[in-house]
Image 1: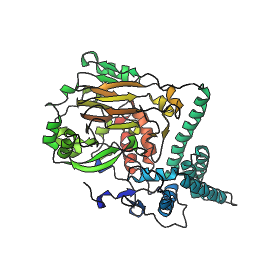
Image 2: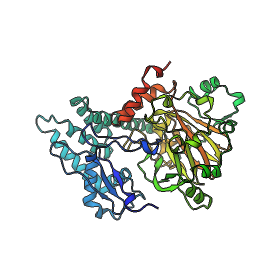
Image 3: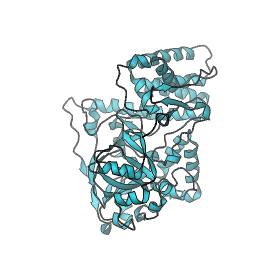
Image 4: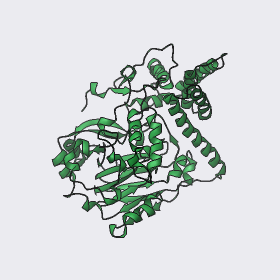
Length: 480
């Protein structure tokens, strides 16, 4: 169990300066998920008393919305004790929760008024004021005006990467708002129902050449289960006992599902454990934590060396980059979950596709085509990876009526089967029983252009994403 000192979590403050920002690089190894912040911008959110430490006001800059809310929370948290705070020490989740309280919304409205008055002063030429106002309006849900004001900031400082990043975020938010308005006008007042999911195709390797796989599933953006592939991927049969014997002494940071989380798939760091301790807890039914996306090449190469990548996924551009590049060594990664563990609705990062091979257990997957994304009520709290408001375990059609217009498909993945998930597909995963699986994200000629677009946006505030984009644009990766 972690000590209180070990639970201290960095809080990120999105600054005006282009030299200091970050992106949320989930689906990446522990070594590669450290936030790209300069030391003067790193602050702590202490889990024992939710203390938020923030920098003093800088006269030459307008503090962005995260800093404003953090300061407000530090001064006023004693007045919010009647609110039910999420069971989280994650700074993004805490600040999102704080910002949504009625008290903080009133504060943000006053901040918006103050910033608006500065904009209306004669000869206002400060882009940072427009950018700060856009950030406040973003957190107030005023996406259209926020987009207008960040556009002004970009016009004044067209090379500022932080402004460009926020403009892209608000462009996506505002597009979703427009879709909602248009689609809600087409709905009739009636008892909405969640559509009956279609079944996912199940095929044998005997009937699936690589060419057929690409034409029938990859190009069409359809998930598929290959029923008899996993046994040929390992030199020996994988089970929890094998994992325990080969990786048991290694330490892992486990994940937990957090209601109202601002993080991808609503998964946040839980405790640090050894692999064998975690497996023993699972077998005893004493944990709900999840060993999620643990890089085998980085953390347990001896296990990775026993794997053979299927022919359908042999050409992965991510593994043709230089050693040390973002995502170069992230996959295949290990997943071990107790019965009942879930990863809430999410989309895999930077438009990558992925596959998962299951060795033990059963996992129920619910998918949606990429075009359904606006109908699933996505938000973008602090990255370009959406977090969804809907709960697919108990869909609330009254609050989220556009769910009735979605096109879900569903399957139960069983031992010995491999599942392919297309680029951009929102999906929700439930572990029906204790499960053991591996997974890998994938970039090839078919999703190359979209991946480059996403990395360009992430690269505005993450140097490692920018470096990966540079390498993917080298001649050897040119899309045919």
